[in-house]
Amino acid sequence: MATQSFAQAIAEAEQIIRTAPHVQTEQDLAEGLEYLAGSIKASLHMAWAYDRDFPFFAASTGPYSKLGLDNPDTLYFSASIRDDAEYVVTGRRGTTADLSFQILNGDYTPARSPDSLAAFDDRDIEIAADGTYELRFGPARPDAGPNHFTLGQGSAMLLAREVFSDWENERPGEIRIHRADTLGSAPAPATPETTAKRYDVAGRMLLSRLRTFLAFPEWHYLKLPVNTMTEPRPTPGGLATQYSSVGHYDLDDDQVMVITVPAAAREVAPYQGFQLGSMWYISLDYINHQTSLNADQARVDPDGKIRLVVGERDPGLANWIERTGHRRGYLQFRWQRLTRELKPDDGPTVEVMASDELPRLPYYERQRVSPQEWAARIAARQTAVARRMLG
Image (cartoon, rainbow, N blue to C red; front, side):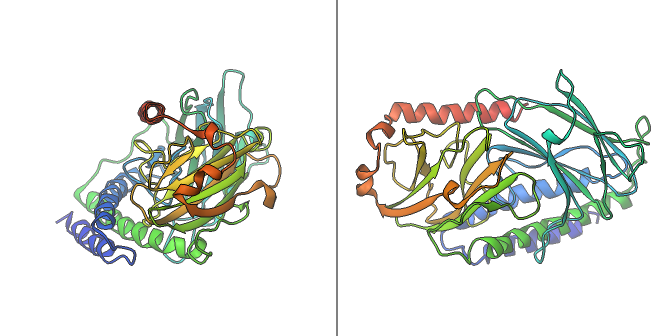
């Protein structure tokens, strides 16, 4: 049967979820099974999107198919490519905080990350006055124009990331891709054999993605002291103009983590965002809960600092980051579209305290919000994400 290998992969994937070392509660397992459902969906989607001759941009992660500590502020798109062909990317620049491109030479595995062969943001391309652009990716050419980018040996995937900071007012752009010498023609029709192969690929992708992103935090997070965050540093993986600060937490319900960070100047970092992640190494529910905040959403204190309060219980503060029942998890800041290197004093400081100690924070009264104000914040998130996903 064409689906047999995929069905076997699903059964094996469920065992990976059920035996994950961090599964201790029914919530852990339930979230793992939800993660599995999104991973099944994404693996099928990406297996059928794999076409290097007739490529298209597919949403590689989203609110219901999460992967790799996905950023709640980002739309992710990927297309399969080959290094000996030429591809044309056309689009229109939206009003989002950042638009970046990256070329990878493979996929993530439990043993290694793919090499980044090139990475740049839209400051490196020529964009017309009406916001439109055309990029060409392919072999080196002596007559290459400013919007031509050479595909290095082994180029296999083109990623595009569009990053929102002001969820309410920023609008996404448009983006398309085609292979230069196949536009106007059509791919061969599917056969039972090619379809069975795609099911087999989807199964292998499913198992690889689960194993990889259970192992990934061991490389970059869990070896760090708990309840700390690193200094800002270039994000691993070669993503241009991005720095990050990472950590992992373990908090009792009557404890909070107060993270204090300077609000980045817009001319230095047009995007600055923070999020929590579960032990499945994916974002928490950022639609119905405030599990992330960026510089546009956070309430900045008069001293130019953002004070985030990570905790389980509602402290009645604007910058509360909801744990949503997750005693343990991951912490991540991102700064993007940087114009200079970040220094240690650009990054966060961390203090763990009892919840009833919060009134001693600077500007505590200024951070207070009513239940009605909090409901309005959540409603704005729900509305903005719904609009963004139709963009």
